[in-house]
View 1 (spheres, one colour):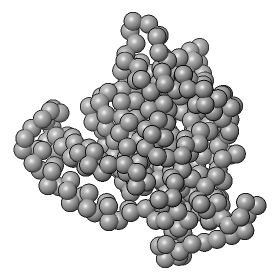
View 2 (spheres, helix red, strand yellow):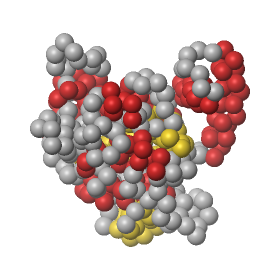
View 3 (spheres, helix red, strand yellow):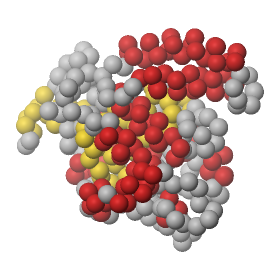
Length: 329
């Protein structure tokens, strides 16, 4: 099998609004997917919005006091990994890596994303280009802030009509930052026409709609990464099918106004409905071979090639123009 390549793009923003506190990427949301993807067989490239040293939110680092929650082992592993830390200290900018031939784009969260991901023209163009090309775009927690300005080739928001998840309004209230962040991510995604979905606060929850994969909070980092591996043909689909059942059960409980919990009749309904949905998604969103793209005016699977400095390129459209990305080898 041809190796799969994943581009991870993080925030470069380190200031928490006007509070005087520091922020950045939430280390769990970078480290957990980083190792899940690498250990799963993907080649991972790390970048940030502006390039240079990636800022880590201090609250996400180990040993920050008795009130700190559990820090995943992957976070400690990342800090002890010389290669990973070297990549994080000297990350290229999103502009520099936009032309790299990758199969998937992953956006970790952290509150810093709320300031610079929505303002990045290069990232908006990259997201729109990937989705137009039927490549995987994934984001977790506040990472979906990188989706809000992205547009498809026809000008529609990339999240319009799509099932998405992200950090909830109630979770933002829980960390006391509702009045600090420039906007509420849940509200903005709904305004853009997304079918916003969520599970209980601080519990793993992720959704996949075609090539778009999103997760709700830091606890969803591993689940989102696993969805990416499955989408790339590297993961175990059984785990994703079980998550699909849970997603449907949450939706049923929300529709019926019941508290989230294990209700046998809901699991039975979810099992039946999710099985059909899984078959539909697998049939409709099977990834094309690397190098295939879908563009306006062409039949699905048509390869649109051009001459670039690094050899043959593929055409893709996104917000603000046309992006040409090299063919994955």
